[in-house]
Image (cartoon, rainbow, N blue to C red; front, top):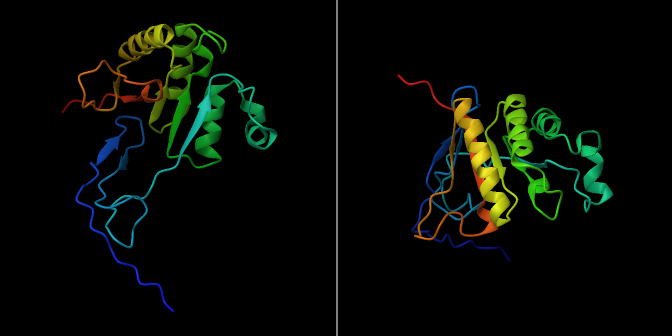
Length: 185
């Protein structure tokens, strides 16, 4: 007995987005017209990308199997980002600023901005920054990161919003991508 696949047409399409400019390695994602990983039903012009999450503090709840590859760089975001790109082949890096949460260290926005700058200086790939998820500290952190980025000529983007609610609508959507501004022509 053989398995007969019946292709399903998906009416939607995924928008193509290029992350990175200037000294960042450009990375194009999206552009597909089918359900994720259904290459037998649709075309996907770009391969899936590999992103790794790093944190600003040593995560206390990580089990030993997860902690082991990162042991020498836990709590050092710039070194962890270099390891993610150089040793593990990450196409982009997400810096999760766990330590800025009031219940997980309450690090200052200036410390968070310094971590963001250090990671940006250490790797050539696009960077996603995920905030603490707590209201007041999230706002203070965003202001510090954006001020720091503007001073250095970096630009940022955030996910497009479809609703009229204030952005971000939930703590898990608090991420931005950072890269140098493209030279004007």
